[in-house]
Amino acid sequence: MLLILSTEVPGVTGKLLYSGTDLSYQDQDPVMEPFTTYEYKVVTTNSEGSADSQWNNVLTKEAPPEGVPAPVIKVSIK
Image (cartoon, rainbow, N blue to C red; front, side):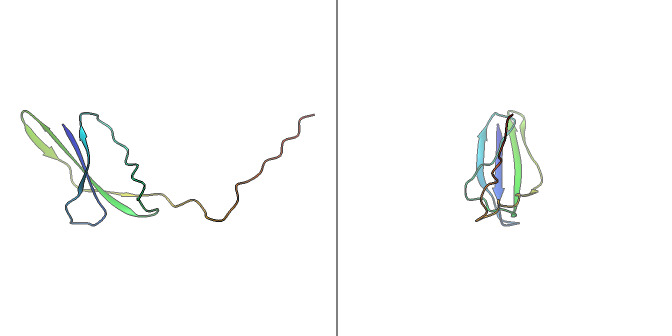
C-alpha cells in the first residue's frame, strides 16, 4: 500500500492525497498556488511493516501571464 501526504505548512501533519498500489502519483489539485512550496511524504505498508520518507519540498512553477493575448502566427504558403 502506498500513501502520499502533502502539506503547505512545514511541521503540520499533512492531508492524505493518495492511497493505493500505483507506484506513481501526480498532484493536480486545482487550488495549488503558483511559485509556492509544498511538502510531500510517502508512506509504504505491507504485511512486514511500514516505512516512510522524510518530508520533501516541491516548488510549483510560475503562473502563466495574465492579460497577455496569445501570439498569432501567420503562415503564407506559395
